[in-house]
Image: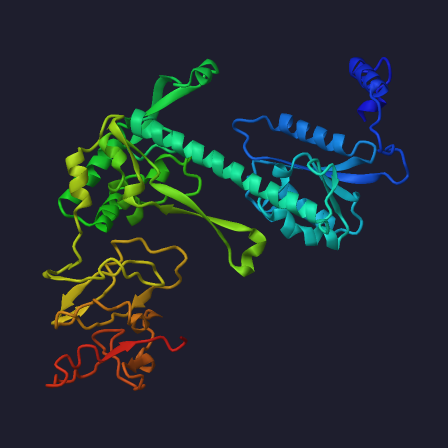
Length: 498
């Protein structure tokens, strides 16, 4: 369209430069003219991984220029596909424009005959090309690379060797950049106590810390930042640590914060937490605050990592999965000196880490239950805690007023209790994980006499207790010399549909 500008048009200078450039440029040896009837139609593909530090228009231009220089005299570019903000590690099915290109390849009426890229690393990573080669071959689409100065021939051993070498180089480039960046960030945190990015912890806010330490970045106007206690949320952090030091459980702290109407971290800063609902405090949120050493004034980094793993065979179309996981404490990087004002003292922080909210029953301080807080109702999601009642250990649900019932639940349900034998000689909920099938949920008021099953699997019809709905009247067998715990774990409840 630009070449159609005539003298006197809006882009007269551009028209003159293009005309002079075309007249002075000599055609390459061995290349046919693009006006030949056998000229190929190309689809250009390019990619840029980040947009914060690069101009995608400049990157797209030089990639397209390289591609146009490669196919000069052999064809013309008739379609363009360019991904912005996509890592090379992503499969083509995960890149929006690459996925559209794959769909266009399968279209018999596609407007192009071949694909051209400006650089191998911009299109492929590792062995991606070798895995996509059968698709290109099936639909008769060639892929042109500047590194080969033409189309790829998968039957040529030299081409395959070069492709494998380019794939290894592409992977090495990513690993090398990652290693150098991590090494630099580790030194900056440990030696300088610098804030290297990310969301500020709940209780802190980011403030200006002067010009950027890098002189060139400082000339560009970049500023350094540091953490400062937030006068609104910092008192809540201090209260959380104080409550934990007093012996309260993490779940109890979370429930009281919700009852007091204190906004959770994602509710305070929804802009930095768009992936969270911000509805209420959770046990994990409180636990994460209690385990964060940055509240002592030290800077911390590398507490989490991103693991990349292949998905299951049913989800291969999605490519690869990413999961955030916690690193071991030995892998954390802690600043040598105090980098920002602390909210809690180091003594209190260390003391909190050594507190075990003791797996004790709510009404039996002398009894310890090893699975307290680890068993969760499969329907309503509430945590079960241990209780000692009538000489037996039980695992009931907490009162409904202590935890909010999820909105996706239908009618009110009853969680029927299960009894388990204690390893201490008594009955306590220490083995509910092995007898999870003995806990079911039924709509309130539903009869249960047909759903009772003995431990040995024998079905029996029992009469429902009128005074205790959801429980069945059954005489407890007396202990014997061979089985002193007989009757303490004699029966449970199981769902007939499982």
